Length: 96
Image (cartoon, rainbow, N blue to C red; front, side, top):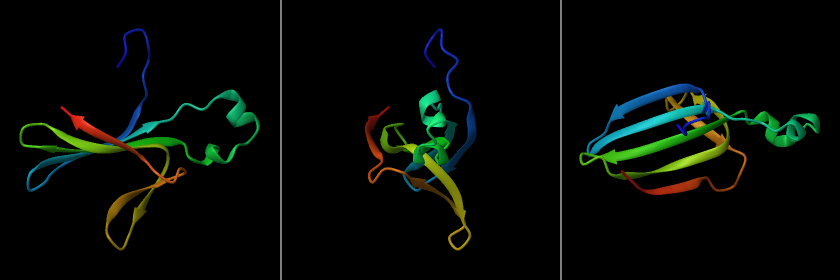
């Protein structure tokens, strides 16, 4: 969090162990501009941002940031899936 700012409310946080460390999945509220809401932009349906982080046993790793995301639960694979409005999510590297 940045001092003087309220930050974003986390809607979902889950951490799971993996063979080489751990995985964290975080879903955050996304702030929408007035103009985005007023003009009923397509991005209005993507109300959250999502973050997936993979860390090894040394707490180093990488991840993915879905800026405009719509989460849904995949019943077949029993997991949370993030639908992203953009073609490519943001790749995060060298996380410590």
